[in-house]
Image 1 (cartoon, rainbow, N blue to C red):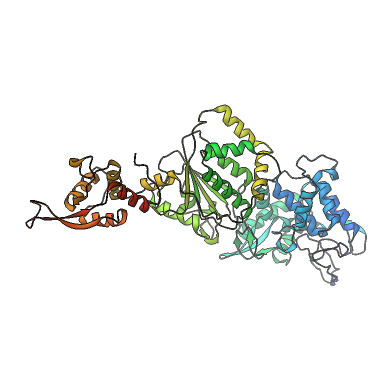
Image 2 (cartoon, rainbow, N blue to C red):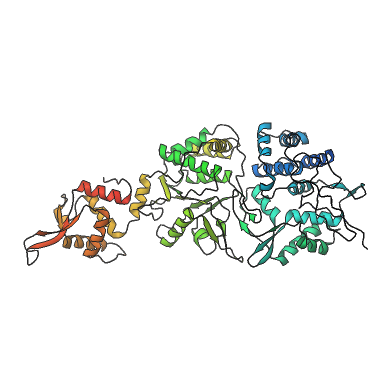
Length: 595
């Protein structure tokens, strides 16, 4: 019989030591069989109490304090997973966060209270896959090497195959898709997110995955039996197997891989008056209702990213007025989940994987004002809770859609808007600082610095949204302007006549109480003939229009000499000009400037 070989891997943590209070799981006391065994526990069954604490301390000492908030939080959570949430484990996490473990001063350290709050928020069953393996992976990356007791109690280096398997299970996972089981480079994806880089869901076919694993083993574990380690990886119950993919800020289903990534910046108290003034004075053009909504819109994304607002933001203004600077703020807070593009086809075209897992989608001069199909698809993205993702060489999948759509444009006509639009908050930015290089240098210094954006985050996280309905957007003059530009040609003719204050040029300066259907049709046809494309206009089209835009108008017959054999003429009895304009404003859903 082959002697029992006990191989310790880091992917399954059912065997956390019982000597640590509040340990998520009790130790497994099973005994190795006489046949070769791949046992997937990490800490030795004999490693309990202070010995385990010292191992975690050694790993933390090897790991520099990360500069990004998510990575810092993941190390804290991994520590809590290993030791349990106790005063002792929190003190150890605090010593690491402050730099004391490495005899360094950590500038990003904000105090014991913040560390303790983060540690106590850890829940073993809601850790988004963050376990002791996370700690081990980071420690090994920074040069830590583990010695654990063998079954005889003597200290010996980890078996070569065990170390190799440990690394593969820390770097990769399996994922089940409609076209088979694929390999997921999970550690690399998380590392990209921690560095603030966009993360795409990129499962590998098994032959490609095996090739990458063999390269990893050749580089880092030359003494391991690569074929055996790789074969064991695919059959080991300790290798993570996901049953699909989702994007869920609440991380409710542990059986699927969660693409959700939160903010990549750590909030902290402070002043953000430069950014605050920029948003109020320049972006919101000193309009208090617009500013109040914008701030709460961003706060809602921080506090309740799982609630889709159903509203997009459109910023209209000339070059050099600060529209793109707002995107810069978003990308500093959500570096991994903000997508910026100037091509509408990236999100409404045949391949739209760029949408997957994104919280903010920024359309920068993505012109599609005349593209009705693209606009209809964009409206769906603003409100629908799910989105169908079509990625190259991957099966189509449906994932939750939490994306907030932002559009920035120099064009006066940004996009088609329905007259009863409820999906968009459009505002025109101020141009008062256009070309003021010194002013914009000051703004960008504030954003690039380490104080104002984190302070903004903290204030927005503390903002009370209890009675805030983010769907209740302010209706702005600019939104009305976009609606007017989106009107069909015949509606634009009626708007033109309301603005001029007359219908028949031969009777200019006078709004008629009665006008014949014949003249209405003739004037409309004359207006439409000057447009490149227009539908035919007849009396039916005129009355369909008036029923919508001027419901107070009545269809009547009136005596008119020479108009018809019986001396009566069909036409419209119109209310006064003021009432006709009010009718139209009620139809369009906003006040119109008639000057």
